Length: 307
Image 1 (cartoon, helix red, strand yellow):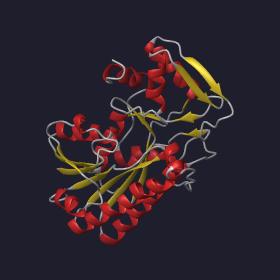
Image 2 (cartoon, one colour):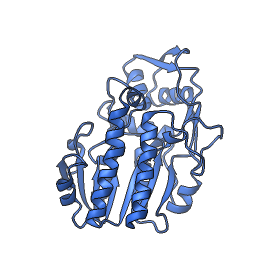
Image 3 (cartoon, helix red, strand yellow):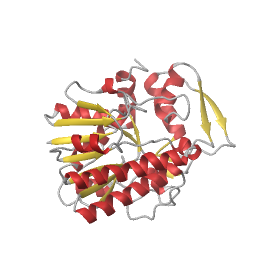
Image 4 (cartoon, helix red, strand yellow):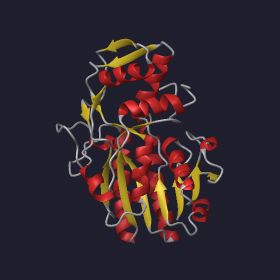
């Protein structure tokens, strides 16, 4: 098959692109490199630097493409609180632009990388797709809006659409920016370098951490699965891990003790966000295979930050 991956030089996108090339597919990547790194891509990937709102460039890349993966997005929840207009431009306007281009090019299927963050605070132990979303950040709101645009334009122009609500993805190649870094690589670095770990709240807030190779398997399945158009599907492990448990797991893998600093006055975000994965199992025949302990061990072994 022939694929276009927007945001394909990013963390999840590059892992997906390289996986598809290894499977023998033709893969084109479009990325503006604001957060991505083209050096992560397999030489077999056809890389183009550019923006999803550059219509002539996008039209050229869509020629004879069978499926688009739309991963181009800004992804930091705290950053989105500071810059909501930028998140709306990239995550919403960018999505509309790629859908317009797909409509014009006659593309038949798009897979949107959405986020579990759109659920916000919920009282259920595990969140399922029928719940009313309660986005509590501009990032979450932008991903929910992107889902709506993808579904609406898909219905109007007969494009098959599926939105995967990806939960807390981690793995080799994930960047560690100086501000608002993802929790797992940040904690790994701090423990290995004997720095301090800042735990917000009491550390009992629970998340669903899923290894990047498992996310890629779900994305691959979504490109060809039957009967999934207009569906929204959670992609997680279905297993909740609180921040204190996460620290103990990293300590066990690294054989080092973390220096923990508790910041009780600051919120650690929603108290619980774990995926109900029944729909993914039913529609995609997908179930995450990598335990948190194994995933952290793989991260330590494969990521240049930690080797």
